[in-house]
Image (spheres, rainbow, N blue to C red):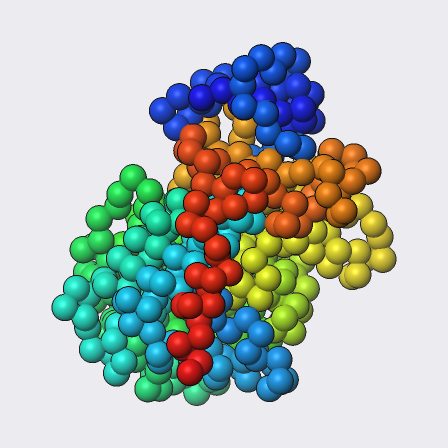
Length: 434
């Protein structure tokens, strides 16, 4: 397959008149300064495919359903638990398929699913102990994007200064008996061409210190993700009970490293920042979720300057628009620093395409890489007049025309291969609130 774009963002920077030759799902050549010839012309500017490194697919059902309750993260969590009670493998397949299709419309080619909705209500195992994970595998396949299933260990109901709390009724769906039981269940999952199996520690609230090392050992060289210091209350409880920050606790038990991604990393001490960067861990920011839940603004620029890698996620999908996540990273920095241009466009693109934190060799428009690309129009009401190099500061998912995953177009002329994604979402979500 041969395609052509007037502009493309290559590893060397912005290029003109770029020809792409794709065979067997990979770029054979990416050649600037070319003639279009008989190649398929893509509009606007072509960017590498985006990585959504932190997703809770079932949270998509909460969009537009929580604002009237006000409160904070903990208030929102009660409504989230109500949705979790109502899902089964079939309804989860419908919801996740539509959720992943919406991601595809926003340029996502790989998603990291932080998966902890494992069991039936009351904690009973389905006949296939990984039935909910298999629903996610099928959903991603149907939507045409790659999945890294970050199967999540979740063992306790929370953490206070007195220790870990028992699971409540809804949390029984999330939990295995212990980390060894979790690892045995995950071992039954078989990776496939479009799905990798990774691991996650839900948080230091939900996995006691003595269980974390089992998760780390079981994860091996696979991606390992963890919610870290999302709320001040988490830090306070960890400090009171363990006598140290969540970052220091994870470091003590060997949970940090080049395969680890710390999700949110909002409330970090200076020592935490040095520990994270020294370990080689990635920090995944989810700006639209962090602002929706009033969690705070994390030290993204400080982490990057200290040598950390950054990635992005849409988390609870209040907004499913990865261009907005990247733009919000810059805008948050402007608010806290009173300075503009805190992140250069190339830095934002790097956070937007951090597929290696999910175990995939994608994220570059270069020969040998997976043939993922996103064509963003430069002639819409939002983007007309925009310099191509600044498109991430003006465009939204509404301006995305085409998305290719492994050499296959899953979005063309702004339409997903599954059809009307809005209808699919409505059909999946409305029954959960009936």
